[in-house]
Image (cartoon, rainbow, N blue to C red):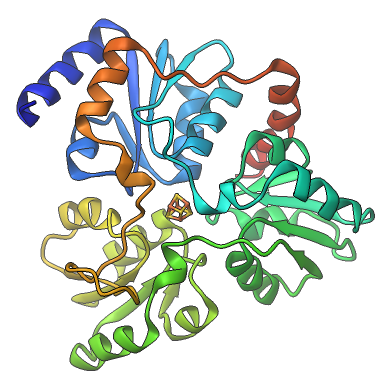
Amino acid sequence: MDKNFLAQEIIRLKKEKNAVILAHYYQDDAIQYVADFIGDSLELAKKAQNTNAAIIVFAGVYFMAETAKILNPDKKVIVPDWEAGCSLADGCSPEDFKAFKEKYPDHVVVTYINCSAEIKAMSDLVCTSANAKRVIGSIPADQKIIFAPDQNLGNYLQKETKRDFVLWKGSCVVHEAFSLDKLIEIYTKNPTAKIAAHPESESHILKVAHYIGSTSGIINFIKTDPAAVFIVATEAGILHELSKAVPEKTLIPAPSTEDNSCACSECAFMKMNTLEKLYWCLKNESPEILIQEDLRTKALKPIEKMLALS
Ligand code: SF4
């Protein structure tokens, strides 16, 4: 179907159905264009908490839409593609995490928002990369912490906060794929560039970064820093929002180890959503996220604690 037709129909349908479209920065340009709000996990969780719409269309990955449903039990939450997962969330099963947690009974459990409702329900606190330091700072200094499911973010936080962590060994397939050699090659050709990296990246990438922060943190850094060239080590979808905000700056996506044609890193899960799937999901109000009430209320507690701290 023609993209302009789809975009017009989506805009008409969302008005007719009192729906709101929340889209992650990593979504395709065409989806960002029809979205009401674009943001990172924390910004979208807050929007989901405050919306008056009857239907939330979540263009992101499954755990994000699930978080929106946990916060909005009375609203219909629908997704363009049910199968759009996340390597971090999918790599931490409830059975394995329960066994892991049982090995450290005196630890407080902090989980990155990129996990399933079942894992959130087993957590004391949830965090995003934007508020992780603040969330950890709210825990008494002598308290040991289990951090899951991202070991790269966990390693980074451990160094920053100097706290005693036990880490679940999960990782993001996109942020783990950046090539240091190729990054240095690009930097050598652009020696005035600043490197901005997401803390899901591996420690050797973080070591060479001028700025480390969440997706929204990276956007703010690039908007406000006087440099003219930036090498951006996070999912390449962020460049859409950035190129609108700072058209005068040169933005270079950090290269991945794979020899793909564009040399940048894209999340295959995020890119499963298309404008056409978004249209059909809004038209049919399906697939819908449903969560058992008992699980939802357990998963809600650590999310509410995080939001109160943000
Ligand atoms: S970029 Fe990584 S953390 Fe984000 S959704 Fe994709 S796999 Fe998950």
